[in-house]
Length: 595
Image (cartoon, rainbow, N blue to C red):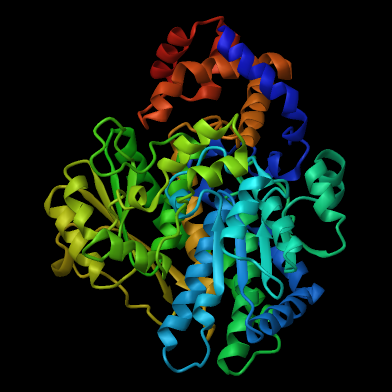
């Protein structure tokens, strides 16, 4: 081990007690998917069914939430706040941060569609607060998740005040950034709801910062523990799925009351019935078979070194969330900026129908992007002199101008032209999609379509004359009909399907062992702990030794990580080194032969 990696390990171990999260339910292995990687090798549809089987935990927890009557109470608080000029904040980090932006986008989209029918400026009364700002929609921002001070600062920048309502959403219940947003909101006099997914007794025993929030009587708790994730620790799955269900239910009830649409007294129970119907549909042999075909398509594309372009409009934010989250979970290359000639080509990218990228971002968010643009003085006030230089360097890379370098409008298509071996996958059925699918097929690319529709649209199909020949792989997801203003059940359907598609594809590519994400990228303190635990478990080492080995491997691959180049899995390399007494170079060569 080098002296520098040893020093970094020692520094982490000094504070590791704050981030040792192995006792949390969300970090444990789900028994249903314990052999997921083996099942996926034999039968893709069977592996998909296992993933959807775990989603039964989401339905069960949602049923429990509905019966509690908590939704009505929360709705009343939110309505009273908005009617009195207050605002609603959704705060989060990583997956929950992207969830916060999705909630804000769905809310704004509804009111934009009603202009000018409804008085009041309710459209602009919600705010999403994602650790690292909107730039983190594309790529996690180093350092922001680990410190409460950043959460406090981002809330202050938006002027949180008395009369506002804050939903501080954290999958594990321990994220420092989110806890910081909760405390800042409370200090300002806002009503705080803490939304999380681990049992109170475990959090209070093991995580001091969580204990302080949970035991604070002025903060109302919304505990949505569903149990272990389908992929151990991958809270982008069931944890954020139940949060999506609950938050969309609350927002649906609020929107109905504010817009004067007849309120459905038993709306949470109606949502539950539709959710149960959706879940049964996703596990049907027909849907599983169609989705398995698309998994096989994507797997073949990535396995052979090619790329996928996703095309979406209405569900752009949903698709972007899933594609972004693949990078830290499975160590795939993140979205590549325009003009970046050193970064690895992104495996997947998203395009919207707007001609220019700024308009596409506006359309996606339903507002202007909000990125972190702090001055040097502001940075010093937050982090002090010792961490100023490193933080300032990060801040420069996450501005609005940097976000615009991710060309998600049609002006970016020429940067990712498709050819033989690539694929185009459309999410939806607007006129935008057939044109793109047909163009991709003419260039020799494979094609797929995921269509979410009501059961009345039994005759849905892309005509061969419209898109060329052969037919793309079509996944048709019948979504239960509702008159919900925010169409929440469909948004849940998109999330569950995209999670299953991307997860099963990565499992097939060997990026999961059993149900452990052994290609996880240790990009923050929580993930460093997770990677350390995986190495210790798989290599038979104690925690301290495993952590030292992790930092030694990290030092080896970091130059490639920081320039977004392809690099080997840190956990996998460390395990090979320990088991076979190899150097970093030897371990990397061994991985090339086995992965």
